[in-house]
Structure formats: C-alpha cells, structure tokens
Length: 220
Ligand SMILES: Cc1cc2nc3c(=O)[nH]c(=O)nc-3n(C[C@H](O)[C@H](O)[C@H](O)COP(=O)(O)O)c2cc1C
Image 1 (cartoon, rainbow, N blue to C red):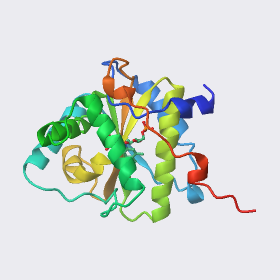
Image 2: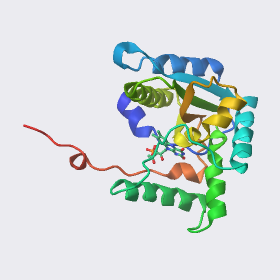
Image 3: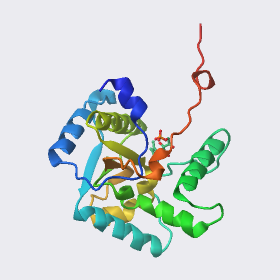
C-alpha cells in the first residue's frame, strides 16, 4: 500500500469484526512501528498488548472503579477551558458520532453508555495500551505520539484498523491494578486494533479537516 493511501484510508474505527489478529501480525506491526523516530533515539514508548481474558479484566476493573467514585486521570489530555476553534470541532465530531449511534441530545444515560464502549476498545480483538515512564521529558511524549501515528498507518498496510483512545488516561489507576502495570508507568492512550466491521454505522463517520491555508503560513 502506498503511504498516501494508508494515510487517506485511516479513520478511527469503532466497530470491529469478531476476527482475531494473529500474534505474529501484532509483532510485525510493533516491529515496523518501532522504526518511528525519537529524539536521541531514546524510544520512550512502552506497549501493553491486551487480547483474550485481559480485555475483559481491564474493562471490568474500569467499570468497577468508575462506579465507586471519581478517578484521578493520569494526565489532562484535554485543556480545562475550551476555546474556538477547538470547541466547535470537538462538538461537531461528538454530535456526528452520537447521531450515528442513535444518541439523542440531552440523553445522558445513552451518552454514558456510548462512552462506556471505550472500555473494551469498542469490541476490538486487540487493545494496545501505550505507556510512558513518569520521569520522561515532554519531548518523549512527542516521540510517543509519533510512534502511535506510525503504528496506526502501518496497521493500514496490514489491512488492519485502529482507534486511538485517550479515554484510558482517565482510568490509569484501575488499569495498573488489573494488569498489573508498574506504578511508574503513565497510561498515555489506548489503541483499538482489529478489522473494521463494514456494517457498523459508527464506521461511516468521515471527519472534516481544515484546508491547508487555515493552519499554514509560508514565510518568504
Ligand atoms: C490521541 C487521541 C485520543 C483519542 N481518544 C479517543 C477516545 O478516547 N475515544 C474515541 O472514540 N475517539 C478518540 N480519538 C479519535 C478522534 O475522535 C479522531 O481521531 C478524530 O475525531 C478524527 O477522526 P479520524 O481519526 O476518523 O480521522 C482520539 C484520537 C487521538 C489522536
């Protein structure tokens, strides 16, 4: 697959076929993704692969922890105050997803049920948790983001689909206890991995992008 095609066909997929991904395929994917660059080649990313029983164990721990009270997120992925144009963009994708999921405006229970589909990686056969050590510098977080992007594009090359999920940063503590993970590892994000279900209405979402002049300045 040409790299442009991989980029153009990657979308966040939220409905997966009940088709396993071979361990060898996952290992190939991680090996090619690890070709991602990092400052000083420090390769600060760590990947925890969830498949089989570990998926249910983590989802169960998340349910239980959320039911017992508010949780301290591992870090604030989103800003505390929203401003334009981010607010409108975030709202648009949220409402578009709700419309496809049949969630009505104001129906908090349905909204929460939809949010809970994050817990088990939207039913993907494989969940990846990307973590970083607490003492990593801010640049290492950039490196991890590049690794995640490389991985998602490489997945397309293998006919696989993904959904990045910052949701898991909200529930780092129960995840650390359920797996378990060392306490010095911060959960940066998850990535659902599997084969897209073409019948899932959620997968019909094609998100918009700002045209190039909106985010680019040429300095002569
Ligand atoms: C780091 C990161 C975290 C994200 N977290 C979530 C998430 O927790 N749940 C979710 O459904 N989508 C999540 N998304 C997907 C975004 O909503 C999606 O990338 C965006 O709307 C653009 O759509 P596209 O990926 O289909 O191009 C996340 C994306 C990124 C890059």
